[in-house]
Amino acid sequence: MVSNPTQQRQLRAHRPERPVARVLNSAEHHAWLARHLTDRDRWLCRMLFEHHVLTSTQIIDIAFTGRRGANLRLRNLYQWGVLHRFQPHRDRGSHPMYYVLDTAGAVALAREDGIDPKELGYSREREIGRAFSLQLAHTVGCNGLFTTLIRRARQPGAAGVLAAWWSAARCGRHWGDIVTPDGYGRWSETGRDVEWFIEFDFGTEQLSRLAGKLARYERLAEVTGITTPVLVWLPSARREVNARRVMTEALRGLDRPARVPVATSSGEAAADPLDMAAPRWRRLDESGTAGRVALADLPTLWPNLRASAPSGGQRPTAAAKPATARPEVAPP
Image (cartoon, rainbow, N blue to C red; front, side, top):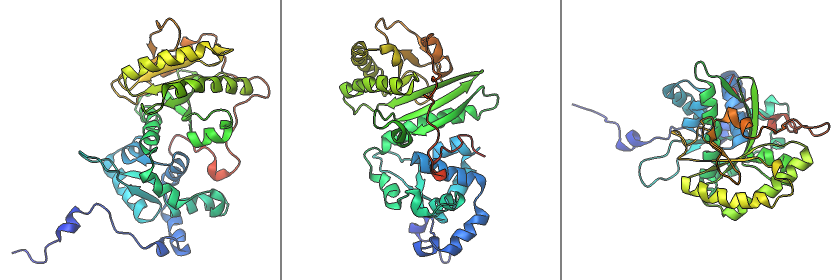
């Protein structure tokens, strides 16, 4: 005979209990965290501060070797107020958990860098409010392009590594007066470094607006002295065809179109829709005869491409504040 059975609401609850906010924000709790947060925990906090929101699957791709260990650790970080999580609505099935930085994690970053938490520019309301943002799917999808690269680089015998990953916010701080890419990355493979800007199109933006950015990328190349490929990811093959037509027309109208090397791909161009390293990128040109190449082979599309900057035109380095500096891409 069963006595004192577990209540049904406890069986179906997926949100573990955690102390009240007053306890999580206390000095005693932060002192306790100093002994329990690992280097990987702190690195994950920095990645979330930089890239705003990551799913549990993306976090596993970049920092863990298995789902069970990741879920256990993420549960602890949630209970300790280091990370916050939410699960968006889906009509069928369910989304994975989405994680953002919580107050205790932000305080840990600030104290680690020797600054006051108020100087960090962190807002708990803003971070948790991303659950309702119309840009949530775009942000998570674009982040997925980079976390997939990190996952590939972590495989045994991998030849490439993601050496840099800048968020749209960081790109905006450096170049936002001209153009704000959805991200910037640098991939190293077989002794070759390839850097790029990414434009992640979800099919909701007018193609004329997307094409209009090419003139701004031309201006950026003129100002910085660096010619950087612009990779445009589109959701479907049909969308890619239409976008290529509009962007080709815009490219013809530029003063120096060679300053804006563009390649496109769609979510249907590879087995994994977000695998940037796959042979999926196709040069944008008038003839349209160029084949698709892998990320590491992008320089072959533009033999005369010069990625290095002349004197005085070096790529801007990380921001001044230590806590907002670009985190190392590889986990500890």
